Image (spheres, rainbow, N blue to C red):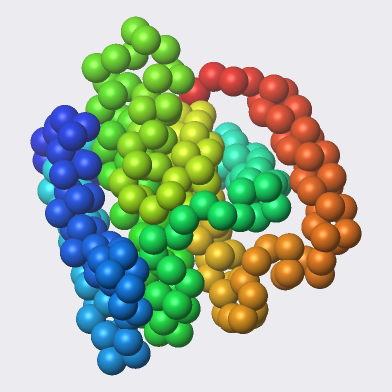
Length: 266
């Protein structure tokens, strides 16, 4: 069964994202810039806005979805050869995300965070907010940026090579976060998600990776509400250093698996 009603240009998906997310994103950003913290009484408004924004984004995607995405190809991403590539992509994402977060915490700790830790903790303290950040957000963003933007760019600019649509969608994915503290991670994660989507031919791989990434961030916040840094979670600098070395080795092994599987889309 085709996932399609019509084919839409890449900018349509960015417009959907902006329309659906803008109000929810602007609340904490404006509050931070004006020196006002989100009060506990505003939690329901913030969480409700974020939840509805992602639901709206998913619904709009299902109306303006790209023709190349099918239910069959997405479900097939968890079985057979697609499933094997999805697993390899996921295993590659684990060390890469840990290395990225450790690098940013240790070497670039002063990058401005416009959302603010207090706002994030408020969202994490609400079950709907937790569900939205961990699951709904990743699903809606993968539909729009990989399923929408990257698919449309690939359709019209395939002559430029497979790397261009991945880079294009990743850069846009980073920019629309509108938070300097999130942009470096969003760019690198976007590149990985774009590669996983292109390599497997299914949205299952980037959705799984994105859900895990956000869920892990939520787990850190819940388990360490006072200090949710990854270094603190791992037990200090020594443990974090050992983890970094293991991540490099794990990333090397997964890259060997990619090479063995073949760097060509299914």
